[in-house]
Image 1 (cartoon, rainbow, N blue to C red):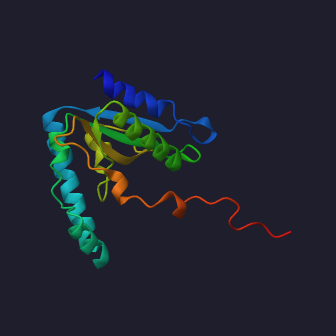
Image 2: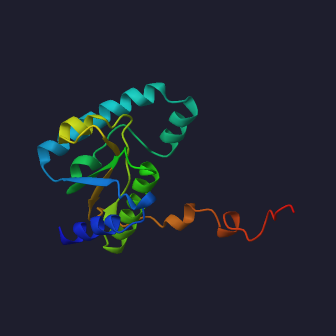
Length: 171
């Protein structure tokens, strides 16, 4: 739990628009509650996938992404991330804090991923969170069952992403 609290502390320290800190997290470790979250997520994803474009369904199948969300019940903790939709720049700010949490989890040698169900609004009623706080993502956190893949294999080279004065400016 100390490692998890350091992960959440990293989010608290992340920058946010107008320094409003619109992030709210609910940590779930109860087995019954995690099972309910998983069931709701799988149902929401089934509905979303029925409407998803064919190219996405093909891509997901090729990537091995399925509607089975076993990671939601096997992870020791689910960090359910909400944002205060009344704050300026709330959504971008919340995603910045999620980035900080995933980096901190890696630093703590914890496994972590970001997952957003097709329609996450059920989290408000299930976790008794006010409607003005919008669910953004669920981060399953724990020790990984297998060593992480070398993600550098699937990354674009830096030369494809970073440029110095490439476009110049017209005077």
